[in-house]
Image 1 (tube, helix red, strand yellow):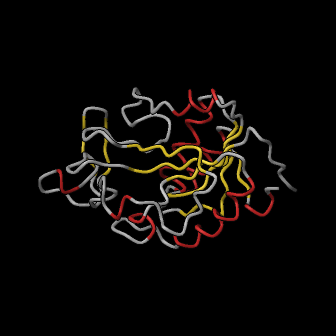
Image 2 (cartoon, helix red, strand yellow; image 1 turned 45 degrees about the vertical axis):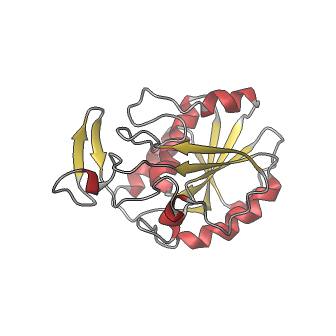
Length: 208
């Protein structure tokens, strides 16, 4: 089985930043996806990259909540918020894209999670489920029809972005070997959720 690409297809690379690859919130085996992504980039006419871009004292940082630790969940005005070690702070090494990434096909870099009081797992909608990033409108304007997702982490920001892509009217595919996931007992349920919402899964080798 092969997948023939079209000019209207987009490769959307999610959060392949130093802190997620080898830094404060590193995902297991994350460096292995960089060469896979680099093989994909020349096959697409359009590639976009997202970056977590947090201010200091961001709501998702355990250090912003007295007595909290990474892994805790706290209640914020828009609901439960998981807490992490400080990561992807604006202007720091950890927020930079991995230096080995091929950025030659980039038509867009989208910064998300920029507001101190609201996190943003998705490239399309912030965690308050009200504020949009403007990405959907921009991609519709560029006549994108299908989005192929790569990046970190598979069942975190990649999953949220793919689900919101479907809601915004795009066909969505996850390139599985161009992603890595954090270990979690919920991952099987997350995979079923994605499939139930019409998100496809494929390997980089079948993309022509």
